[in-house]
Image (cartoon, rainbow, N blue to C red; front, side, top):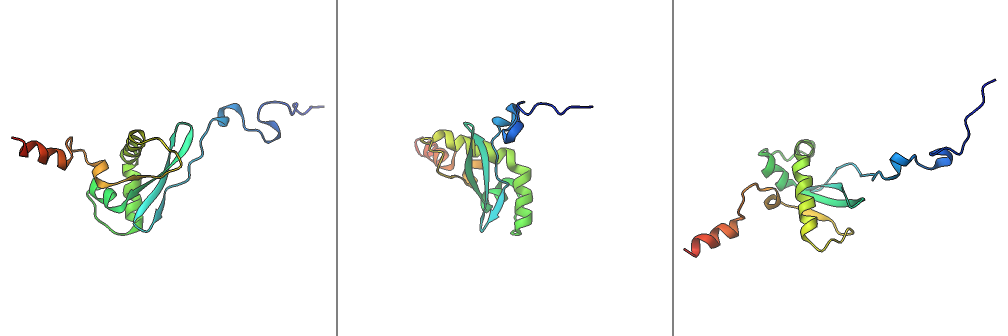
Length: 124
């Protein structure tokens, strides 16, 4: 007769297995009015973020206003958008309870922001 294994092994009685214990559950990206809300893992926690419709359109070069098209572009550009959100988070005072908002300028690959370029030419 075969016996059942003991119930004291890791993961028994509703406790997560050790590998899953450190997983951060992130909510799926979702469309809300004129932005996409999403989460990234930061410091072992879910960091709430948003990216504007205009930022997605500018970064992707596609200007559809249909939510399904904007969500498709978000998914295509997600790595770039998440890197921008993490960079913004690191530049501020680090409060995890505040949403990080990503705008077009945050995704611009131009090394000098427009204000910096204008200041450089006016000083010559």
